[in-house]
Amino acid sequence: MQETLALVTGAAGGIGEAVTRLLAEQGTTVAAVDRDAERLAETAALLRKEGLAVTEFAADVTSSSAVERLVEEVETRLGPVHQLVNAAGVLRLGPAHTLTDEDWTATLSVNATGVFHMSRAVVARMIRRRAGAVVTVASNAAGTARAEMAAYAASKAAATAFTKCLGLEVASYGIRCNVVAPGSTDTPMLRGMHTAETAAQASVAGRPDQYRVGIPLGKVALPEDVARAVAFLLSDDAGHITMHELTVDGGATLG
Ligand code: NAD
Image (tube, rainbow, N blue to C red; front, side, top):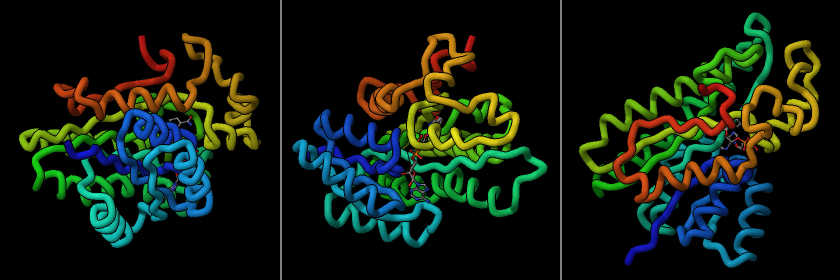
């Protein structure tokens, strides 16, 4: 039987690494992608040392030509991509009226356009094979107003809507496209908020365990909590689920 190959972006980050590890532990071969070549190489080497089938490919998802080259190279070296996980992301905080053009563009170009580039390149190939699964890691911020998160929330709402529309278009080819919407998750991105200086940021700044305020389950997510939801939506157990948004936020925005 042909081995399953997953391409995971943001694989040098907290959630992307957890997804890469879990999928590889389940027997999937993983093409791990990130623009931070150094950290990606360290992460992949560590996972390979544990006997996991992980190969790193440094690439920037904001460049459509780089993404085309990347997917071509991955398929040439490892074979057809069966699963795509869009986990690369950036967070720029600040009141909407003070965001710079660069804040806005940097956020949208990774979190929304990057998802478009990757999904277009991979899904075009999946359509020819009439099979595949895509999971985009968006955010619960896409559907709930949060101070100082306007650019981020807009980018995640775009990624969510794009992934659902894509899912409708490719359903007849047997390709499923779903969204995982995490809440606060203990990763470098969340820890980066410690340096917050403005009032609204200070209200959520602090140690990761302090983010649990407002989370009914009483704790921030671990990257593994999000990874399990991603792995489920990629798996045959979710074979009749598409265009779904699965929120993983301890109930923070639910109920
Ligand atoms: P992280 O900062 O640990 O990881 C993000 C990774 O994306 C980094 O390794 C970074 O190098 C990579 N990346 C950024 N821009 C890229 C680009 N242009 N091309 C390729 N790689 C790029 O953050 P994380 O918390 O693991 O976030 C993973 C995803 O989960 C992101 O999309 C994030 O928005 C989302 N998310 C995170 C949280 C949270 O609280 N941590 C909550 C909701 C959603």
